[in-house]
Length: 503
Image 1 (cartoon, rainbow, N blue to C red):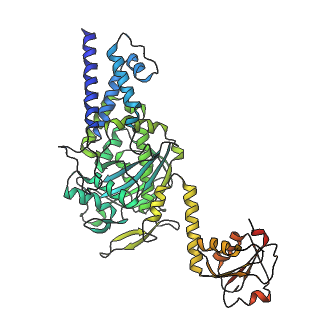
Image 2 (image 1 turned 120 degrees about the vertical axis):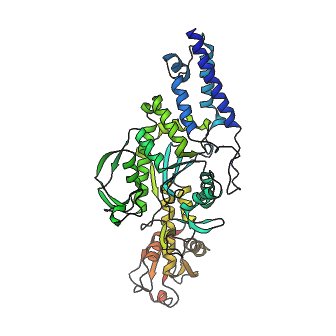
Image 3 (image 1 turned 135 degrees about the vertical axis):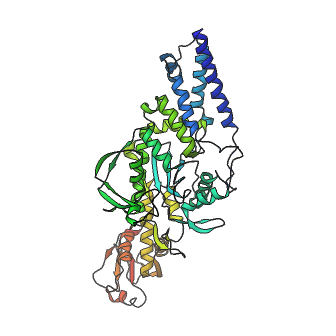
């Protein structure tokens, strides 16, 4: 009797898995051309609660050494138990099928957008307080986190240029439940990078999940105080000082419950360099990683009561488009991540940052791309796993800009017998931002070494001079011959090409 009962339970689990699998295969694809896409379901496309449902199923399947060996070992020894064998093989097929690979896998880049909103009882409940693009590269197992500031101004169809954190609110006002999809589609168009998945959570959900996980351990990089952290429910209290509470974080490891973790992630008026949105973005990245590590620990996944509580919490406060067939692969990815090799990036207004601060027509604080367009930001996102190449590219662009700003006139003279050498070298200079005034044959021939003459040493043009010396691998002459001095009113620099430049 007991044996038949166990078989009945397994059959029920078996049917449940394949009903859910079938449903996931029949789900409609997102139409990226529909800005306010909303899936045609009575409920949103997929709630993160299914993740925990699968975790519960796996926990049940793990009960007993026999089922554990069937599911996870390379060989099955369950010939006498066909139901277990069949179930194990089907789960293996879900894990291993190439058809079930995550979106973006074949292009070696999986992008997940992480969104944080205030939620009920918070001002601007649907404004995205946190926007992080998390990327995974399967070939290298690298992970990158790019924080996008909420004050970045972007074009929003029907609204003009507005803060990026408004997109979710506009979408939810028009079609409840569409916010995550609309934000993903919008950022995909703006930044030119496909966004395959999104996860959106409100503040209370964040607090509750961290608490259920038993808190998180975070390393505070530097001590700071925040004397103006807003107290929920006291936004209009008097005296005014009652509207804020004082936060203090000491440098070093800190165990944080959900409430403290949220305060650490949201603090905007901290001392000691922690008062900017950019510093806050870095703190948010640390919290996310700490929560990820805690969530995917074996103590969490094999704790049925905790899984059940997390599931109930997710139904209230989470939204995502992650499907059933993706769950196991995300879990495997989480185990492969080396936390010491994660790439952290924040779009900011630092000296080498890609943004500048300004004010809008209503005097609202805004951030804009430094170059006036999103090209550099697109390049950063596209090359986030190849930072050396990207840094070199940025340096070359900066050098070219500095050279063009100096507006130096250059004359290139060929002292060799190789025809067209001056024209060929001049084209190299032009391609790198230099302005070549004239090319000609030199009056003096057979220069062994290329020489640069600075005809206006009092006029400082350091970027051009340094660049020319490096480009031509030339010597800077301390004196100026009479035949070179004749060009003084026509150019700032004269380059005489020698035999050493012939290739």
